[in-house]
Image (cartoon, rainbow, N blue to C red; front, side, top):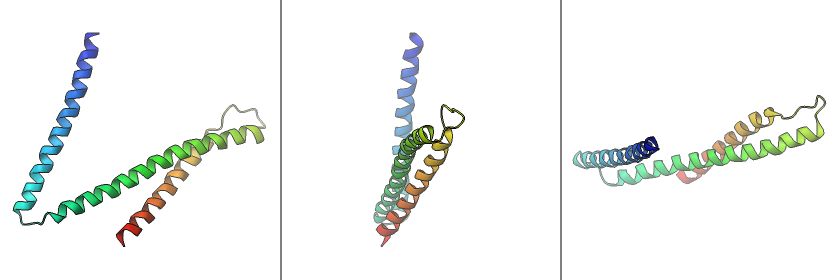
Length: 118
């Protein structure tokens, strides 16, 4: 029981340390950029790049979960309609649908980012 308290405290301290280090170094970086003569508009451009990255990650996660769902239905279809040897599962359904849906989501994010650039 005592070890659980140490693990919880260590996790929270790690999260706090990571966030504190990130925020302090980001502040130092911004101050150094301002001292070197760059305009504050560069921060807006940096934030826009982060938004694009978040869009890509969000669409990839949506594609992953959609691939798992489509793989599930594809597996059920194969089990019902094509099961000559009495298989219990078809992992090929997941192994094909997950990368396919992730690839489609990456293509969609590419076109969304390209449209936003114009």
